[in-house]
Image (cartoon, rainbow over all chains, first blue to last red; front, side, top):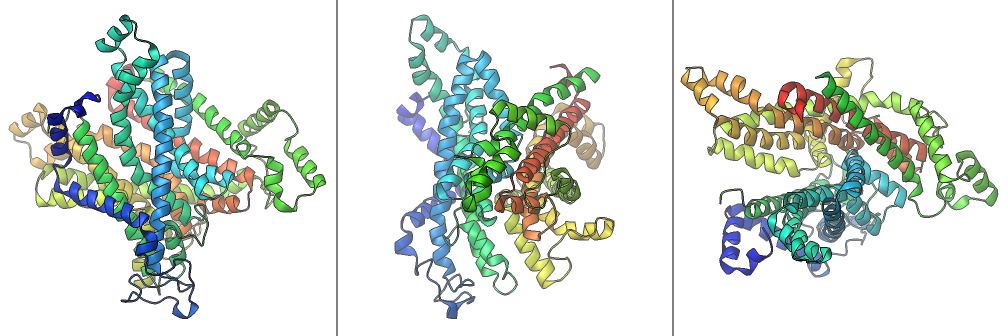
Amino acid sequence: MDNQRFTNNREMQLFLRAFFRRKIVIGALVVVVSVIMVALLAPQLAPYDPLEQNIRNRLQAPSAEHLFGTDIYGRDVLSRVIYGTRVSLQVGLYGVAIASVVGLFFGTLAAYYGRLLDLLLMRVVDVMLSFPTILLAIAIVAMLGASLKNVIITIGVAYVARFIRVARGAVIQIREEEYLLSAHAIGVPNSLVLWRYVIPNSFAPTLVMSTTLLGTAILTESALSFLGLGVPQPNPTWGGIIANGRGVLEIAPWISMASGAAIMVTVLAFNILGDALRDALDPRKEK
Amino acid sequence: MTTYIIKRILLAIPVLFGVLTAVFLLVHIVPGDPAHVILGMRATPEMLQQVRQELGLDQPLYVQYYKFASNYLTGQMGESYLTGRLVIQEIAARFPHTIYLAVGGTIISVLVGVPAGVISAVKKGSVTDQIVMVLAMIGVTAPGFVIALVLIYVFSLKLGWFPTIGGGDLSNPLEVIHHTILPAIALGLPTGALIARMTRSSMLEVLNKDYIRTARAKGLSEQVVVYKHALRNAALPIVTIVGLNFGDLIGSAVVVSAVFARPGLGKRLMYAVFSRDYPVIQGITFIVAAAFIFVNLAVDIFYGVLDPRVRYD
């Protein structure tokens, strides 16, 4: 599965057909695009200022004026959920981007140069994977302090080990392939072999992993925010909104539920896209 | 078999050391002086010096590491900055609550996931199959703390069947179970969804095998074919995923127990995080990771019991 396949129109068509084989994928794509649009257009879409408090209007049930009701400070929950999209997507996208680029780099190096580097790196990966993800994330944020930047770094660190493994696995599979051996034989420099032939091969599995882990990263971010370790209040985050609604769950369940639904729908959509991408890029699977 | 077990145990030791090292380094990844971080804004130079000396921060890193590691190996994890109590005692007092929750979550996940996956596989393509798989897909994406809140809202606040908070008196098993059911469901459902998907694909693979056709041809009842012949052969990946997820469940238990205000490790960890109580953060992080390694080791060994081929790699 290398880059060449996409230069071919026919291959592209086959890929798209495989990708959209299940109708639900279209729905997932619509959801993901909408979530991205909501994040980009938050100031235009949000009916109220997400930080504006209005004590007189506190804990109002959902109505035409406040579609998702208001919270304990009288802030509009819909506007807060809309702005929360920004944090979740930023943390998910940047965090996973860091993890995948770093993972691709080290995974490829480990597999390609092998021996001592591989041995050492894989032990580090073993250790990192010995921590439950959320615990590792809590420990790192606890040390760095809670802020948008630090949560992104935390997600990057917490997920990098899986990307190293995936990239390494992909490279090991092709390391002894004839086209690589012949590239070496005719004197193509190592760096060019890596760049032209090896990296593109680990690219597909990394991409699949990224899409799948995007959803998981958003879940981790919301758990951190829920625990008070994400982007600090009063900034709207999905996890933070749920935490806000927790104390008044009995009288105002809409606060937590609205944000919980946003998390679930978004993560579900990313997972469906990840699955579809995996099926479409996996040549072993019949189409 | 003995060689296999010894080999597995020997392989786990360096990882455990790696975890110890990572936990040690945790405090040192903070940019700047840990003493400063511990004391915060109110620090005077004298106080800083005193803390540095107490913690041995004025010594070279390798000396600090040696002390840290040898202390940990003898079960000394230091004292909590906040309560002054031994970290090991703080952990021991709360560990049972966390383990009960993780075990409860695992039981729920297996009870939900395996039958759902089996039914789905046996009735592949049917409406039941589709419903189960859609539910499983949603289940995988549902954060435990959101499920927890829904469960609290319905079963505690509206119906009043279960307590909303606490972990129950440890000397009273019934009370502990009563307190653990809702959090265990919240914890187990997402994993159960994962297990359902795994069970289904593993079962589908096995159901196509020749020996299943033979079993049917022999005239065995469908029940026996599915549960005795197929499920047993499909069990390996299921056991693996159950084992691997047990570790993650201990981690997620931290978040879920925060919702239920259970007196487990999670609550203590959060308390330590907000008060920058580093010895406690390190101790809990280490214990949970060590438990995770131990569970994986057990899974590996069990794997060898289930599938003799694994022993000779």
